[in-house]
Image (cartoon, rainbow over all chains, first blue to last red):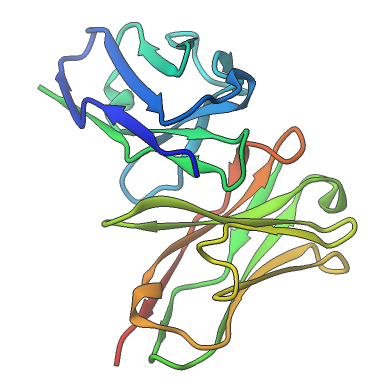
Length: 108
Length: 119
């Protein structure tokens, strides 16, 4: 199965700052089949980005996704208080679909 | 509005059976894959598998195949996750989620069901 590695494990930032989260796949992933999710404590994950760069319904444009080879990036241009959460990447091109271990974005 | 409402928390003993449910509404149940994800502190999010209620096609993660059974009942718009014999390692939060755009990412999620297996 494809293993996804996310970095950093924790990102300590202040509101208004830019967040850059990375996810690397152990083997080639079709970029069309890559997603990012946000999860807050006690809640289910929420789809943010699919197809590596397409925002899901209702997701603000401060969230963006990009890809370069097997390296995927989620960028939050200016952190809002509600953006502090854990972010997971997922590939859904090869079964079994797999998730990364998550990056926690915390308030500095 | 798409909604997935899961059954409540369960506390079971090792060896017992369990079936948890996920009731879907707000969309055509038979035309989207719907699946299950396990979340534990140690292993994070794990994709268990999905079912297509329209023709009951099921795809499993090999790590879970044989341990759980996924099913769907289109007469009541419910998906299910069943264990015939629980183990302590099954303790986790289980989410159901709908696959948007075919066999793919999960665009809507249920609220989660906590399953605790302890003697």
